[in-house]
Structure formats: C-alpha cells, structure tokens
Image (cartoon, rainbow, N blue to C red):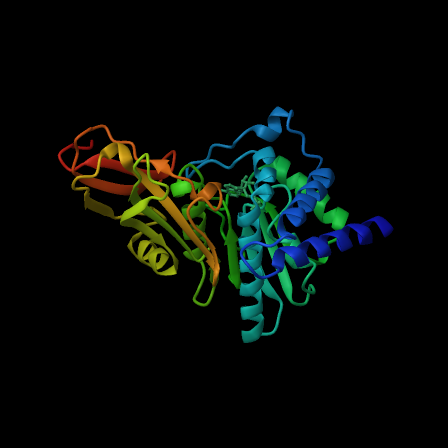
Length: 328
Ligand SMILES: C[S@@+](CC[C@H](N)C(=O)[O-])C[C@H]1O[C@@H](n2cnc3c(N)ncnc32)[C@H](O)[C@@H]1O
C-alpha cells in the first residue's frame, strides 16, 4: 500500500508539471523523463525482447509493437499537448454535465500514457475510462501498470480488440481519444479507428485530436520551412460526418484532390502534418515525429497536374499520380 501511494504521489507531481500552461517550461523535460522512467520500470519494458518490437499487421494499418508504443511517451511536446488537451476537454464536459465523463481511449499501448496523469487529477466519480488495445503484450503490461498505481476505480472496461472494427457495447461516450498516428497519416490506423467509433456515436462527442491536417507542401533544400501548396485533408468532425454519410457498410471513401503544381519541382514536394489536439494545444512543423516531412512519391518526373487520394487498403497513406497516368 505504501508503495502504491508513493507511486501515485510521483505520478501526481509529474502530472502537475505536464499540465502547466505554456508551450515550453523548465519543468517539462524533467517531468517527461521522470514519467518515462516510472512507466518503463513498472511495465518492465525490454528492448531486446523480439515480441515487444513486433508490429501487428491489420487491414487498416499497423499496430506498433509494445516497445515502440512505450517509447511514444518520450516525445515531450506530443505527450504534453495530448494530456493537456484531454484535461481541458474533460473540464469542458464537466462544466456541461455532472460526471462521470466517459472517455474511450483507443490504442493505449502498455501504459495508457495519455490517461494516467488525468486519473490522478480527477475522482472516479468525475472520469471513467474504456481502454482498448489490440496488442496482447501491451494489454498485459497495462494491467500491471493499473495494478501498480491502483487505478482500477477509473477503468470501466479494458479490452483486447481491433478498434477499427470494435462494436461499442453502449454509446454513452463523451470523449474519444486516440493517438494511433504517424506523419501524413501513413501506416497507422488513426483515421479508421476514429471513423469506426464516430459512426456509432451521436452528437456532442469530443474527438481528440480535434483536427489533423495533411498538406501538400514545397520545401527546397536551402529552405528551413515548407510552404503549403494545398490542403489534402482536414480530418475533423465535419470531415468524419461527410465520410460516414457517403460510406456503405464501413467502406470509407476519400475524395480525389487535383493539384497543379506549376513550377514546383516534384522532388521538392512533401506532405506536412499539423495536429490540433484541443483548444490551444497544437503540434506544428517538427514539433514531434508526427509532424516530420514525408516525401511525395511520384512515378513521373515532370508531372504538373497531380491527383491525390487517401486510401485504406493495406498500408494507409496518400497516393499521388499524374492526371495523365491511368490507374488500374
Ligand atoms: C502510437 S502508440 C500510442 C501509445 C499511447 N497511447 C501513447 O500515446 O503513448 C499506438 C497504440 O495503438 C495500438 N493500436 C494500433 N492500432 C490499433 C487498433 N486497430 N486497435 C487497437 N489498438 C491499436 C498500438 O498497438 C499501440 O499500442
């Protein structure tokens, strides 16, 4: 009991520092470092264990291995902005209704990294979590983590499941949270997890992140920042509603975007990613690995009129081809 109380106090102090306002402050990196050590010790993360490094291939994108999911905590600004965004969203919901606010967290990894600092700030009468994870090793470690901090009272349900096809047992959900993301929405299933869950829920739900924008951008070698040419997707609530409206039996369809790149060299074309988690919690260019450049791959070297489309099958991401090339 003494040990649990001690761990909780450490978590509370880390959480206080992470929740502090401001983009960057001198308590932030020490808090994330301490949080990482705490979680890695409790979760007994073993970088040499091949099962912990293995990704799970799924129809709508990879679920990354336990070791990699554990490492996400180290991304200082990502972890800060997501936790703070969730905290603010809960406060907003609590201002509208009495608790508990039910948060559906899809893709927890081995630690439910984005949820633990929130649990120590609210009572179980204020917040309740449903925790979904497809990776059994991560799921088992998460059970150990919840035990170690004795946070069972905050967990309504915890399941090993594929969140892209999960059928909700009840629709009383206030907030959906997922960070199953990669730059330019490639390889991981964020879009499909959100669409699956949103297609089962009514109005008034807050989805975190609120908006993920992927732009077609130009960056010349000697330039420090990319220049946006065209927005390819603004993945937010309105966009989800539109995709869900046009879908037949969860066959999600994405529109084609035509772009004339004019004098831009195809070799200077990149996808750039901006993420609004909630209110003023934002991740822009190079703020995290999710905001790094992703090169546009084109078969034709002198293409001018390009067509972009987001696709789901196999490996998610944008496809790009010249308008003159016939796609079969
Ligand atoms: C990028 S990690 C993030 C971990 C943690 N939420 C964090 O923010 O630090 C994504 C996690 O989502 C899980 N995941 C990916 N696809 C999933 C799916 N279709 N259903 C359930 N979990 C999934 C992965 O196994 C991985 O643990």
